[in-house]
Length: 257
Image 1 (spheres, rainbow, N blue to C red):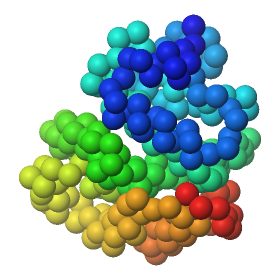
Image 2: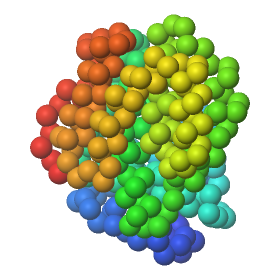
Image 3: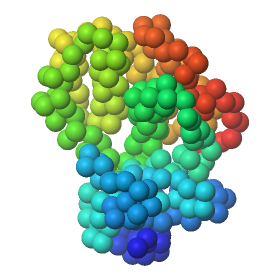
């Protein structure tokens, strides 16, 4: 059974309640926000909840749903998951265009493997600092844990040979530079990349100021222009066909976030 905002509100901390309330008040979108568990996800989506994640956000024509693996006992981990998904909802409510669905396989693969993850990272660059500073919910803690695991368990197995491998290394480097604020762990990441993939690190270091400039932004058009700028930087080093660019990245949107 889906839960309403009011049902969930009574289970969460005052800071998360404030974030939830503020995000919903920012928009005149009349679609209600609901919460569901992994069983509801399977019922509505017709597939299993991914084992790799604990939460996800799905917009529908008649409602928004934040899915958690379980919603009947909300602890600190679940609160961080909710805050994370509210961040994505907040940006959508305030005008950032969603990407249009496509039946073009090449466009879909490009979105799933690169353009979509890059947009997620850049959205995190917007709201991680906002949520930490204004609502005292530290999403960077999860990023630090994931960064430690990435350096120890995943990075040693990644190669830096083909273009897809380099792009994957690029995405991970930018991801953890955005999602962790632990200086010691980030220094370890930078040293590891200097030894393993210096060429990727050099390009990523050009890209990071573009991404980090989005912190707390309130301008949709600025977000899109920074996304475009990031793609143009990458296109000078990798093959990023403009014909595969996401639709939202070619739109001119004067709405305010």
